[in-house]
Amino acid sequence: MKPAHVPWLSCVLALLAVGALALAVPVHGQRAPRERAQVRITAGGDLLLHIKVVKAAEHHGWARTVESLAPLIRADEIAFANLETPLVNDVNEVVTGSPPVLGAPSAAAQALADAGFDLMGCANNHAYDQKAIGLARTIAAVRAAGMRCVGAAATEDDAYEPTIVTKNGKRVAFIGISQRLNRGPGSPEPEAFVARMEEDERVLRAIARARERADLVVVAVHWSHDFHDHPSWSQRRRAQRWVEAGVDLILGTGPHVLQTVTRAESERGDAVVAYSLGNLLSNQGQRWQPRRSLSPAAHPAVRLPETRDGALLRVTFEWRDDKLVASPLQAVPLWTENNFWTWWFDRDQPHDIRVRALASVDEAVRAARVGPIQEALGDAVTLVDPSP
Image 1 (cartoon, helix red, strand yellow):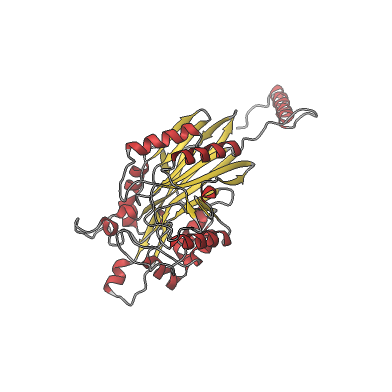
Image 2 (tube, rainbow, N blue to C red):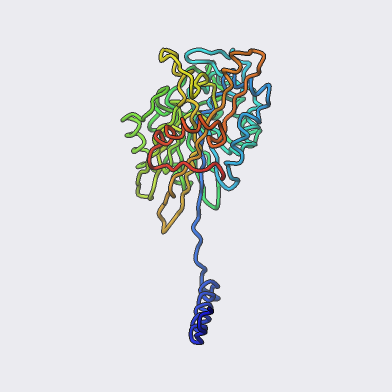
């Protein structure tokens, strides 16, 4: 049964439509409503290109190790990860140990760029594993692939200089710093330098310069200790100090496991602190399987599944009435696949190590790891489907 025709209702609806059109089209001489500017940053954790990761890449190609990340990273966002391996392997011998000496071919840089990364953190404890000359060549390889290094440069002053990226009309400054270095530069006049966290006044001056030049300030810090699953009191205090000094986003790496992500407030509005984004790609945790028992005496680096957990953290900032607002935080859970046990029982099998979205891996692994990933990141973060 059709509703009765009401002539006056048609007139009212027509007038409302005309009024809405008048609001949508700016009158000559009047400004249209201003769109809110947004900047989204997607960040991953440590790239530990261990010996077996390099062997896997040599057999399957570097693209395979990280190509699953490409659909997760959008062209309209800024993508960051921490490059905790020199892209040089011919200065010092690459060896396992505690700590290991890391090094990988420069071809890895192009694979990371093709996956969608814009920035590599180059300030970390392995920065001088191939001496300062190796760090200088790493910076060159990163640049040649179309990315930029954060926290390391040819001069000490430039290592602390903010790296500025413009996106959607907003200037975003990145500062990279490391708490420690495993080795020295290897020469009295180093070819490259690393920004250090303990240089408090230098770091604060860098933050002040970034604040003057940019709309958004990010600090990428490599800190903490291996396998610590929570930030220390001193880290929390330092993070608070940086936020008060002008930092809007802190991206932590270092302990090789995920840690909590928290919100903070500043005079500018919202701030976000990610204490550790864990590993993005490594050979750690390779012996773990959902239904395999491992001795607790085994080294944490080979048995902890947490070292294979990862996340791409998505932080979207918006400027509303001159206040910075961080949208609800999201993360795509990741997992590093490793065929260690296949190789262990058949040494003719090549190594195969790659990072993938957790949603696309074995069901038993998904069921075992989604809960710990959520718990590690905390309630401020929502795990999301891998589609961008």
